[in-house]
Length: 471
Image (tube, rainbow, N blue to C red):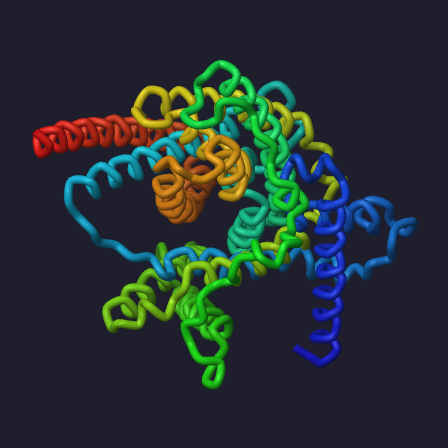
């Protein structure tokens, strides 16, 4: 890469930074954005889209075409360290009766999220077949429809995963699919917050919430997106290294990028030597597998304490913020508009099925705080982890209920599994078509429900054992 290209890349990040800051300002200044908890990256990305040449052509701010192309490609690159960071710092262990009960609840939370994710995949799959039947001139590309589950249950950051994966398969519509995923993610995060807050208000008035007796107001600082009181500002993370040697953030970033580098080496070797099966695995799938190994080795040799989850999450958050802003600012709006009818149908059905299915499963299989658990899962399955966290905090302001721990761990597992399922389902559809894929998704859904039911029986047995010990 030449000095000129590096300078242009720096310009791209400078503009994205300006858009992020603009988004943060608008989040704090506009009440609607505060109430919806829209991230600054989403607001800033749309600001860049609305004033740039993607929509207005020469009448908009004349961002060079090279910048737009770079922004379009950035999500697929920046999402790799985001995905790779997921296994880093994971610890496993513990035991006893109480641990068994907690594990059963975590598995149930994971199972509900898997069931909802699979249901969303089925909605998208059937929506494509429906529109191809009634309106074949739409010419929907083969894997159209998966963007619902990836946008709803993955959020804006997953748009980069879609773009990266399709681009790696040399599919010409990778940029369009990335834009469609960004669109469904936007509908998901906005609709998820609106529906979730409305559901909490209704449940509180009807006495269905465990703690909340009446809908409470969200703290102003949380709505604005910044904490102005120095006494309430939280630490970025633990400093696990001395900065006289290496900055803690530099250490964490280096470990994450090392895993990404090893993943690139393995992927390139698989392509160079044309190893069957391994050639089609996307880079982010390699990176997450490599990081599991890296994390295991670090834990075994006693270096696991050098990884701080908060620091790791902040690094992934920086990459995600820039990836989301870039993805939205470069969305191919004109191309997406021709698919707006099937997108809207998917989204509306997605809202209904996601909410009703989530709440049904939680009421059926959870004995403790089923509504609060359902809100956390619904928020995540229509937006991002933070959406679910915000809805849970409205119901449980001080996190007194056990839902937060079960939800957090369950979300980590479903995040990993989602990245594994995407290449499997897309390749299955591209090679064998609608029928086999429908059967596969249906089997996954059934397996998820069975997993929830079995975990529910385990938790009941544990409670009976606890009563026996107490007696």
